[in-house]
Image (cartoon, rainbow, N blue to C red; front, side, top):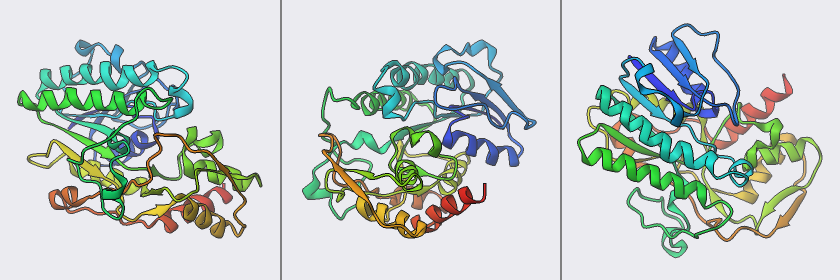
Length: 313
């Protein structure tokens, strides 16, 4: 198959490229390298286009069978400084990929985010997994609202394409982590790399709020496996949650990392943002019933692999 991956040099994208390369697919990677760098450039069957996805000239692209539209800055530190870093790929870039999908009758898979669910109703959701049709409650005009808002706009464009007969799906990913997250560059504001950095440098762990916020984290290889399986599914649902349904509080996460590193938790509590939800755990029944898939790597095993691997570098 000919597969285009926008954001193919990003954390998730480059891992997907490697898997699909092993399966002998022809791959085109489009990436502007705002928060990534050129990878997999030594692989045959992989072509790189270094430019923003919204600037790609469709006529310059060969026939494509499957599109993974993953290009988007997920870094609060970056998109707070310039909204175009998320608006352009999530809206203009999505329009461009829909145009390509229409031209080639290609399957399009748009990676969205669990952040589109917003705050939800904590009284209802606590203890339960978030369903794909859950009603969200979102704060407007906050420092980070441009990210989920632009993702929602991208979702609307993809849904409109589906309504017109397009072969597409929206994937809402929940807190992906793995060994190639940008740990050495402060993780672009992500909690696991930030905790690892702080512990390694004997600094305080910055915990927003009281640390009782609940999250669920999914290992990168588990996500990549699910993405690859969706290529061959005869009919995809419009929206699919992909994540790990095992929850953990932010404080317990800090404890787990410190335990692996054999250190004590040295926490500094900071006022949390208004739009920081108390509970975010996915219901993954839809993806499990669609393909033979479920997460395999526990959080403790994944964190151990990251931490032990870095010590051996």
